[in-house]
Amino acid sequence: MLCSLDAENRGLEVLGLPRNDLIYQAFRRFRHREVVHLSRLKNGLNVLELWHGVTYAFKDLSLCCTAQFLQYFLEKREKHITVVVGTSGDTGSAAIESVQGAKNVDIIVLLPKGHCTKIQELQMTTVLKENVHVFGVEGNSDELDEPIKAVFADVAFVKKHNLMSLNSINWSRILVQMAHHFFAYFRCVPSLDMDPLPPVEVVVPTGAAGNLAAGCLAQKMGLPIRLVAAVNHNDIIHRTVKRGDFSLSKTVKPTLASAMDIQVPYNMERIFWLLSGSDSQVTRALMEQFERTQSVSLPEELQSKLSAAVTSESVSDEAITQTMGRCWEENQYLLCPHSAVAVSYHYQQMDRQQPSPPRCCLAPASAAKFPEAVLAAGLTPQIPSEVSALEKKETRCTPMRKSDDWTLMLRDTIEDIGQQWRGHFPNAPE
Image 1 (cartoon, rainbow, N blue to C red):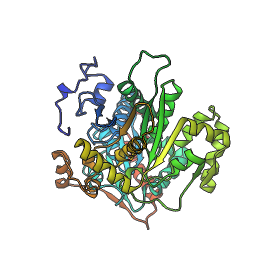
Image 2 (image 1 turned 90 degrees about the vertical axis):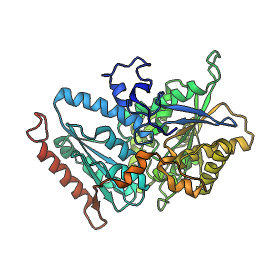
Image 3 (image 1 turned 90 degrees about the horizontal axis):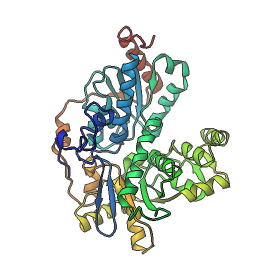
């Protein structure tokens, strides 16, 4: 399952994509011929593997496409940009992979030192291309977002240096992620000859709610899916869905599903806007109150629409390891801890013998990236050779210590990049 496939065998040409097509270029290094693969396991468990890209995580799907779109327009306009990304684990490596070596893009990634797995960190710090700049922040993923927000709040600075983000705040990523939900539906629906079309339940393990927002958009487009937001102990999305409590907890609790250790799910703003009938004033008021007080109670009508569109579940570390063990025992199939958050919901419903439509659990990452969690579940990690080889590579990472001014360090790096590119591009920052 983890073996590499030759580009000729990836099925992209079978789909009729010419080699110079942007989508072909985006997916040409994926290991599975279908790009995304559905594994049908015992007891009605369907696992949609979104992790067959280079970094073994679902972020490869949207970021590879977004990077191709971006470079297409940059080359046409003879323009250079600087991308700034904050990561809780997978976004940083996928973003780096998508643009490393690009002549008209520099990328700055802030990673939370000690809060990623070792493999996640190495996937970022072992990329030594001149256009890649990695910082190890002494803080969690919410804290490292603060200097990024501060920089992007300076509109003149953003414009001067052609700054952009590749986090899921970037709309292109959400557009690509909608395809996951359509693929899940058409793979799992029992028949398309029924009127109305039968529903499929899609379980989305989520932290920042990007994949969830994509699912809500797919629903609005008419796709008959029922969404389940599956979260770890950091449960702001679960509390919001269940009782309209959109408020921060006192701290972010580290969990086995570390990429979902997020307290500020910024894509919820998009979901609020979508479900409020595109009411920008209501959405803005909610988010401004959240910024001020870190606590919002959703209006009753909005909370009712949210709970009608999405159900939710919060899953403990104990449930994660139990789910990983059960899935292996029943199927000889290794789940990553984030995928296990979704599958835990499936097992709960199955054990309760709850009647339900066909269900598809999204698997955002390969278990190969999380050997610590696999060991915690009492299982044996299966690590591909290209991942093991990371430990022998040279690394480069600039520390951002608690005593440093993170915003100033970020601005200085952006200024240095701008100086380097002046004169190389007609439309470079001045």
